[in-house]
Image 1 (tube, rainbow, N blue to C red):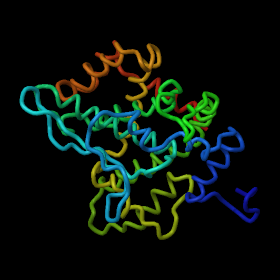
Image 2 (image 1 turned 180 degrees about the horizontal axis):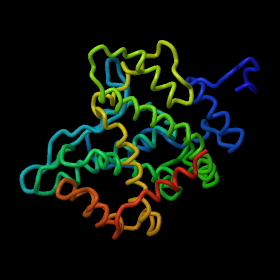
Image 3 (image 1 turned 180 degrees about the vertical axis):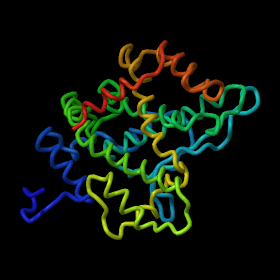
Image 4 (image 1 turned 60 degrees about the vertical axis):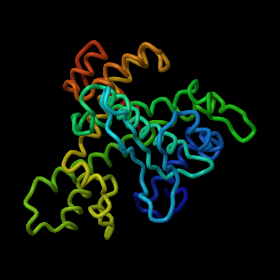
Length: 309
């Protein structure tokens, strides 16, 4: 930070995105602007998906994040599942992180579609919360794979994204992971603690200050009032911690794909039939065991964290 501003005393949360790109360019020789040239929205969309409902671009008054929404529950022999992705991507070139978000939400969509083809009429209420994000987090892996990207990631001249550039992207992939985990821990503590006390007399600003001073690498930023913008505080309640459990499950599922190949058709079919299509019919731990042939552990997740900086 002081290399840019000699008077700087600390790194603030609003500096992180810019400074992270500076470090990636300096230490990993990765130019985010060059990467963006290979991810035009139309090509990303056509390279990833079949036919579903999309609301992909910003407009006035629209929800500003990205999410998958069930349109119609599916039940075998009764109704076909329908789903939509509501997102806010540019109509032209995308950041690679936005492509990753696209795959994340598409993972939810595939989960909804395939699990809506069994006998129970699947809904999100038929799965454990700590399993719900696992299929979407796992699918993010494919946008880091050169063979996958080479099918649709081309620039305006039609040139396929260079393999060396993808290697640089992967080399820088886990930079900032420790900060991201600290952020997750901050919001995990926020969500759990706020639901674990009597709301009468609760001073939200004092509460938020204490949480951020304990867990955030940046401390509390005066006047930010994250409690008013923390959307998952409502949808997830005290269960925001389940994102990290889902992450650990995703790494376990991914371990078989890494061993057998990301495009191994038998592995993919087993995943569809034993994980996605069976959601809600038995405990998630049993589904994972059926797919892996062993009990779940956190070893893969621990190894993933060890790659971070």
